[in-house]
Amino acid sequence: QVQLVESGGGVVQPGRSLRLSCAASGFTFSSYAMHWVRQAPGKGLEWVAVITYDGSNKYSADSVKGRFTISRDNSKNTLSLQMNSLRVEDTAVYYCAREVTVDTVMRFDPWGQGTLVTVSS
Amino acid sequence: SSELTQDPAVSVALGQTVRITCQGDSLTNYYASWYQQKPGQAPVLVIYGKNNRPSGIPDRFSGSTSGNTASLTITGAQAEDEADYYCNSRDSSNGLVVFGGGTKLTVL
Image: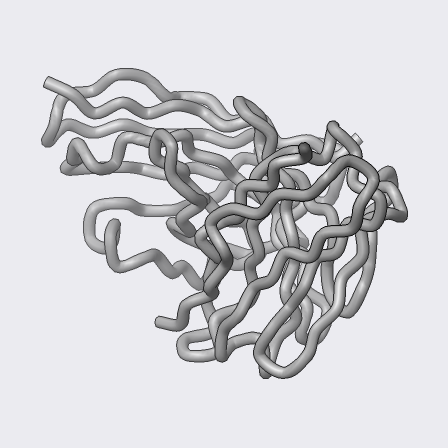
């Protein structure tokens, strides 16, 4: 079945780096744009970054621009998020999600189970 | 960037009908998608586009759009429908993504 599994979360000090991964299975990974979405404790969903199906274009939210880099390896069906200069406010569960867009309808399906990143001294 | 506005909390009596709304300028150009999130779980797509349900989503869930407002309707709410609901769409100002702030649904 279509599945996304994140890994790489943990506890990290402010200013340090962490790399998240998302392993995809059950679909043709190289055909889909992929996203990272995060959720701070007790808060709503916040879009983080997107990468096009072939990796040629990447965009990120202003809150992480210049610090986070999204990438993908289509040969390994893997999505990554390199997070540098981490801040306390980056503490969140990070989800990867597949984008399916048809005309004016964009949907995220499925989502991974999420991986928790805690930035704390 | 654009915004999508949702009521923070809504309640419904068991078996009754509830509508959760999502308002924003982007919805005049793009359809919304709706996600259900239960505590400690990842979001799950429940409605997308005009009124499309993924496989496995009960038919008591439906969607509609009017102007700049998208609605998710649950007809005959069940106890298991108690959850947070989020809308999202493409952001018409920059072509990226916008999420609503979420609505906490309580089933009484």
